[in-house]
Length: 197
Figure (tube, rainbow, N blue to C red):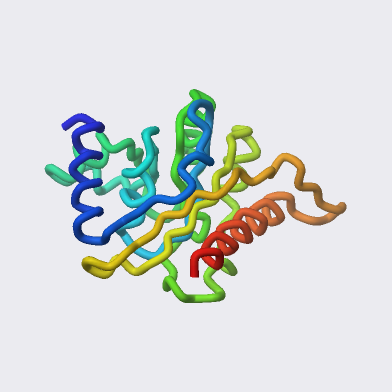
């Protein structure tokens, strides 16, 4: 199944079941490397973040999923690429950077694991992988907030913010630039969440 058809089907399903609506899609550059960095509340997040925008979004997915009949071909056609069990490996980071250097769009969840939608401490466990990939690829980072709980027939909002200027972030000697960039990305995601409540 082609990406265009698969996206159209998922878009229809998400709009009917979750009344999904996108805000701020104009903040996504129409060309060049882009990282879509979103909060993470559900397994439903990757399609939700990608189906309402024009550009194809590539996500990491567990390697085992690609071996599952039907599911494997579907997620591959949707732009997913494999990551080995046990976390993000060097190979996965290299794949991510290569995708971005070819001018494509990558979707990431800096928190790493799913968090409760209303958890105020959800950003504390954010990982540094997104910052590393962003700085090394020089991709534009667009913060995204998923607001809602995917309750049937209730509105779920996907809010795309203005790009985060990570290249201008500086740190003092002894501080970790990846931590500083991660904190700024999560700060912007949380601002988006707060702006629509």
